[in-house]
Image (cartoon, rainbow, N blue to C red):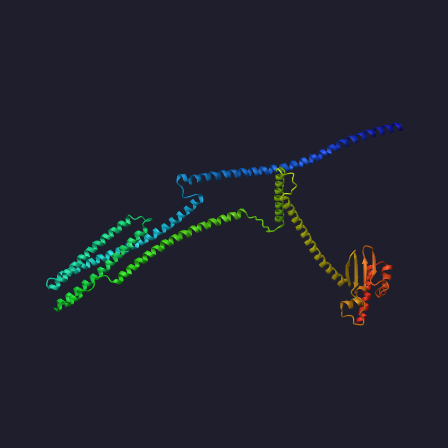
Length: 511
């Protein structure tokens, strides 16, 4: 029974082993396929991510294309308006049209302001003319009264009275003619004002009106002088008639000037010149104001454009001019250009007739020179780095030595091959060598710093006393070496005990 059960177990075990081997054989390709599946899944995920990015890019591209089409249609419409074949040679871009529109608006505003000012001036001058007309009517009435007075006194007058009467008649006729002339001038001014084009003939009309008003003022002045002369003559005639004196005074008064004073003429001429100059200055001021307004509009447009640009690009990457990345890109680009040139020259040499000649292209030499420069630059940077590391190590080592000397009382000197020389700062010879004031001349040791130090060899694990085992320094520390080093194998305690021993000796010597 046991044999049969063993056979059954052996058979089942063999079957299980065969199944296990079969499964292992099946697992190997499955593992390979699983790795492949993992790679494929990873690629699938990356492709899905790329597909999502492509969908976003496609949407953005469609929006950009739509915007491009809109802008293209707008450009075509502007181009059709700006086509030189249609006669629109004045503008070459929509910006020029916008500038011209702004300029036209500014000019229109300035012209409206000037029209308002001109209308105000016209109203003021109309009032002045009306006042002049009233004064002219008053003068005519006074002239008629003077004429009636002369007629009433002319019956009993003699020959001088008849001459005076004749003269007054001539002056009256002259005054009537001047009145008719003034009426004609007023009618002409009204006609010009009704037919004036404000935008084109404003300056010419204002100048003509100024001249008319000046003429009216001069005529009014002449009438006033003539009326004054007539009143004086009438008064004198009445006085002559009352006193029955000779008319000699009348003859002297006849020669009184009825002419317009020269000062008034000069002042009126100067006023007309100043008025013309004022008008020209006002025109230049209006042009300058238009130009200033145009420049203000352009400045506002530029500011808005800059604001939009700043809001659209708020993130800016700043970099140094000679940063490592830029230098690396420059070197890489120069290397690539040199290799391209070398490849081109080599291909030209291979395709040429003299391919059997063993020559080196110039580009290859330049490539080698470039590589040498790169190697020299690398070596220089490494040497610079090593020099800086040495300087740092020297500074740090000096700091370490000073720290050890101040804390533990030992001066360390690092020697080659991993050796360290330890010198106590409390030994008498050390005090003599360092010139301390704690020890007097008799207590200072005669030996120098080379005979009171211990050299530790870290590689071999040995300790060597300077001056040999029979030196004075060795004799001083022999007991300490035996107690701490040979028996207890404790170097730090040995150094501490040696420091205390030297301190006691130094302080006793100082006392």
